[in-house]
Length: 302
Length: 329
Image (cartoon, rainbow over all chains, first blue to last red; front, side, top):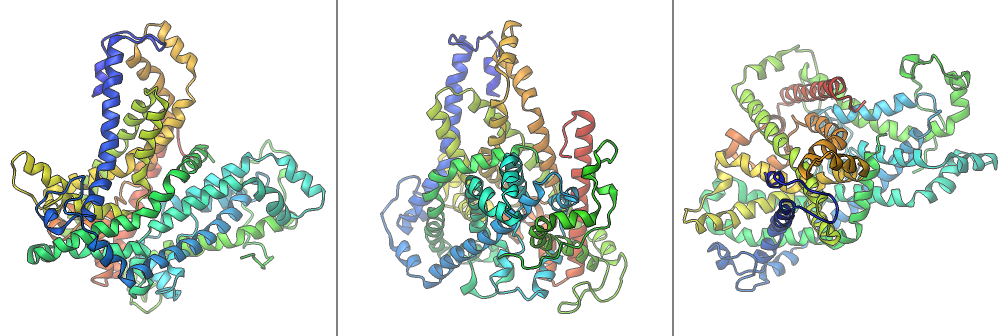
């Protein structure tokens, strides 16, 4: 690939670069700019489509600039009561699921971080094994339905409560805390719950914030559980709203039959994509660092 | 959500096998279960709810896989009605569709591995050569972005871009071709699937490599330079060995998810026209289970898939431990 172009001249890593390396750096900058463009183009073109007049889209004339500026589709989607109901569901599910997940993950990670604890290896193993082997879709479905969770919020918030990856990240963090503080607190007569609540958690604000983000994003984006376990439209999260919108355009018969309807759906899809992505885009610049930090923590082998 | 139950979790039998080799450890750490429970019951109590979660929602479904060997009636027992032995396994081993989806799974899995595993390494190496801090940070931030999108949004974007009036066909028109309905053509599905996968995962995949790159000792580069190595040879002899453990770990994890190729994304993107290349084991069992209500048959397929996945990850781990000395455990 490009790397081959710098093979010719010996170089220094210092301030003086060989000509070959200078050429490489220019090429590299171009390639990375290309990566940025390829990553962003889909977003931009969909924003443009969402603001364009139907006729221009069908003619294949919309690229990065909206043509025949038109916000009718926005008005239509935003006046759909179901859209907002589903949006609210997404928020509710995300908040409830994140709280449950954080509590369970924190408790378990704290227990696993105690090296002296008898049976710790077994407790770690119980969690780790599930990373590599799972019961599978069908038994899970049978279980959730027989527990009577169908069409209830529990179907989407409980079965995926603990992510083993997040558990390991948190465990690594707790292990990195100095033990002296906890020992001192124990001497002062605090019991385990007191130590966790008053000593450990106040020191763990950063990791808890990171975990909240990890869980919140994954629940915000999830759709399959809801798609599987909810029959009622007013229970769906907004991801499934979008899914149902695009499913109309995927089935072969509709593509063959009614081109107009599919086309009309194109603008709606674009608008719905924009509206569902906006919250993520809005918070992304502010929270991105925490994600990176969290992954770094997870890289420390637990 | 505090646990009122002060009862410790069901204590497993005190098998010393689960603990680390007992030989050189001081007697202090080798308590009996009774002493451990008396001393640490509060800690154990914190583990009760998470353990219940794992047992009910992770291990019970594993046991629930017995319905692959038993006749299952919806609404009946979750463990099926009566034994039928290997009937369902024989059924799918003689089912031509199964072998078709099995092949598709292998092809898509292999393509995903081929592109989604090495490309983040390449991108991380390229980013590593950038000196302009702000530019580097900007490229990184942008490349992470797709990772945060829901699969549904990505699928919807793919549909928009590959539609008859979308970006892909605008390019086709530019070079004077006729518009193609990409998502209706089996021969295009793999390309679309893999490129959207790359688009969504490559940036995020660079994080761990960039972290590993910062830990490489600068003196090694110095030494390589004195030995007359140019930039490319420095990359080859210093940088790549420096990130090898990270590469191996991620490769093992990738191989572990080999069989479970993007089930959700395929479910959203495929249609009967593209089944010949798009239908994979997981989507096939989804249809078998939920459209044909063949739960036992679908469970048998799922069990087969999960076992293969487990074997893959175990063997990848073993091989890498024997050859490069890096392993997950």
